Length: 287
Image (cartoon, rainbow, N blue to C red; front, side, top):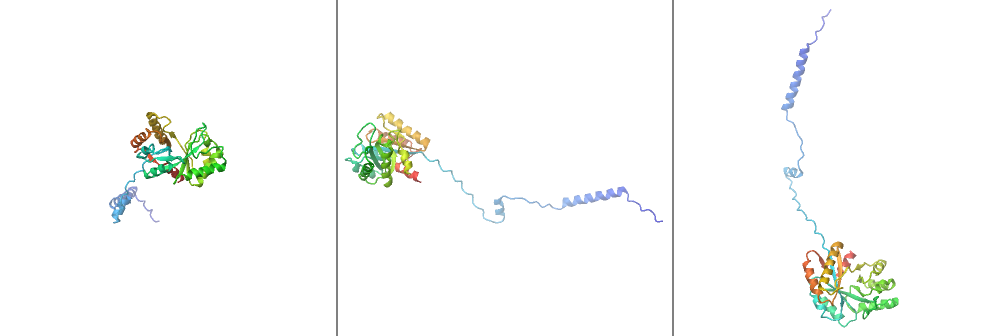
């Protein structure tokens, strides 16, 4: 009978396993490890010899738009002496010239020569019965009479781009009458500024009906002839502009203290507000 095979001793097995573990450990320590890193994009470009893109300069945020101020001076045409001081105001001013007066055409020439702007001051019936002057419109007129009178008023002054109402607290409250006027202005590519002499004005409704932009007066500058009151009215207009983004202010050529007040306050606030012609407000609304 063959003899029985001897089993390896337990101590030998443990020795062999320990040797294997030591050998593997030595291999792991001595063999260099390969690592993968992610470099920033600009550093990779430099390594590969690619020209680096120059840093883009920081673009400053655009300055906030200044509130817009539009000043309109009414009742031009009775004389030229009252007009001259307003022509010297160092900011854009729009003048509103009454039709068919002795100095209407000459005033228009002076205003253009001074680099200012003018529109038509369209006389309309007042609720108190005051006389609006030559070329006035009344609600008792027929549609044709209103249109013919409006055309005549427009034709009396050259190069008109727009109009506003002179008086007109009764007329601007009458839808039929205002529609006749605004239809003529639209046909002549003219805008209309509502002087807003009454809270009953229907001008906005008719403008919407005829697809015309609505522009409205915000502040009257010279309801009082007191210099302090006029200054306060102008400063109120600046406050309105800050709140709404723009303000339309109306004064009158017969206020002798007003030119100096407008000049002083406009220069004091030239950095914070943008002064412009009323036609610019209309053109802005068209964009």
